[in-house]
Length: 302
Image (cartoon, rainbow, N blue to C red; front, side):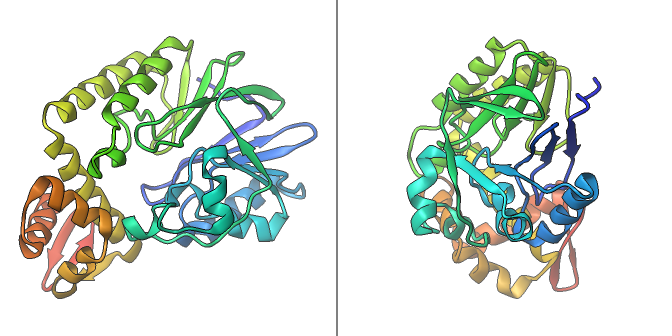
């Protein structure tokens, strides 16, 4: 499906979320800004697309580091207004990195501010189109998705990918998450959608197939929550490896021990020693073909 003329999608790698740029007649906007280490690339992509125009508005679907890490860079470059999920406002205002999950996941995010908040039910004008903000808890309790009924386009963030959805982080800490994922998927199924722009991966049109895959994956996790924990620790290490590209094996155990969610997942579900968990996670990434051991280092493999 062809995108409306006022929309551009910058499909990024798995370290950064996709960016959706809107070039309206009077206002420009960007949804999500990628990870902090890719902020210069994000800025270059936006500048190239906008040419002489400025970025007026920056919107975040949620505040995981791979979706808002470019905020500060874009704010400095454009002095753009920034809108974040309303339920995250106090955390950003105080810059509480524990509450914002950055310390817990071992990830970085440069401090940024905001001008506006968005709540479920709010209406936004992006690229001269009307978009509805809808609550999409599960992967993140505060996440929003954006839906344009006229164009039947859904910006799904990490609530729905072509092959699943983002890690259900609340469940790692003993909070409800699976039920919220199911409700969010049911919400998406109730919408008239012909194109999904996910937080990661290419836009796709076969929404029914993606939903079928997502419901199946959810049932898999609900049937055995250990699998969600296993998925989470693999994702956390892969994210770290994407950022660093190469990690000495001798440093891995200490590095992972410093990531709180890694340890929480282990204590609650996996029950391995720190050494066993580090070796197990490395073996899983190597078996999946997304990393390799070269002499005494774990090396990223795309």
